Image 1 (cartoon, rainbow, N blue to C red):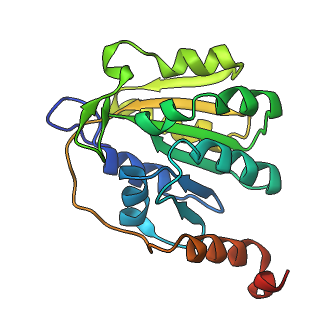
Image 2: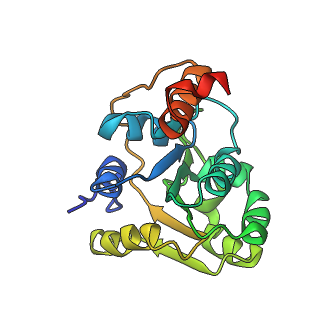
Length: 201
């Protein structure tokens, strides 16, 4: 069961761990900062693509991966600040409509990497409604531990694109860093998907 943090909101690393249990062949793109640290903490590997930069690009990278690998579930796990910066991507994702793409925003209502400044979601901006307005029909807001199993099921249902916001505690957690070189992260996923000779293609 996912625990609650001091604020009464979901513990983000517990949530990540729950989403990774029995993941099968699910591919994961993590937005820079906390989501990247969290996917590394709960199980680093070539099926993960944690982003060190390119703020605002996680959803579009996930879209490209989902279109290229239609038989695999693709999860984009990102933060509210990163999603706000790339909010226009939701219109393109709705138009392309990959059934295997799920986006989960871990929303702590702060920019965790730059000093915990408040984001717009702290002041009434509703990312779920923005996704719906972009044309994404399958959405969810998650605020309670007992809602996490339904979130996980929706990710794997392949009736996407699917978009969810999970309200998480804003606590700082110990950093668990993935490899720092983006070329290595890209190459290991490519090899995972295409085999050892992928670098020759």
